[in-house]
Image (cartoon, rainbow, N blue to C red):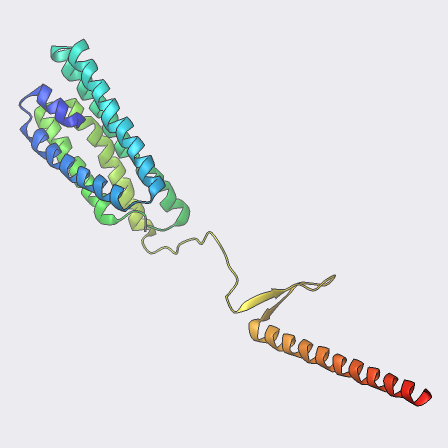
Amino acid sequence: MLWLYYAFVKTDATLLITINSLGCIVEAIYIIVYLVYAPKNARKHTAKLLVGMNVLLFFAILLFTHFALEGRTRVLAIGWVCVAVSVSVFAAPLSIVLQVVRTRSVAFMPFTLSFSLTLSAVMWFCYGIFLKDPCVWIPNVLGFFLGLIQMALYAVYRNAREILTEKKLPADHIINIVMLGTPEVHPVHDAEKTGSENDGVKDHEKEEETEQTDNNNNQEKIVA
């Protein structure tokens, strides 16, 4: 939206208007789909960001530049705001880069996306040079280098084994902690066998107690 505003104020920027109009449509569809299928808390958080950043902030910039500035100063102010926003967008994947280095997994960073972003940065850089517009080519220099970094990391870690953050015991083992003893790990079937043996011992003890009770009763009858 900011780039569209910049293109209309600058004039003679047909490509900026057409491409960013298409981009706004695609992003609007993406946001709508996300809001439809996202969990309730995620929808609320996204709606707050959408209203705060895309609506309130945009209209604040629009009102300020339209009424407080004019002519060449207005164009430059809007252009440098666009540069700041574009730099923040290009810097956002740095968190993914750190995650790739930490986990040694490129699952979070598809190569096709990194390649497309790099190619897009190159094309916009050339377009900005031809227009002699620093507001167009400056942010794409950063985008180009960040794209190269992402593709280099993909080449390094594409075959690397992912570092597991949690180590779990196999599902067929249990931990048997003995009171005042050393913890031991036994297979489940051993634990079942031990439990069966314990049940057998308990049944045998009950039978002995029953026999002892019967003998005592018989002795009392004889004495009587």
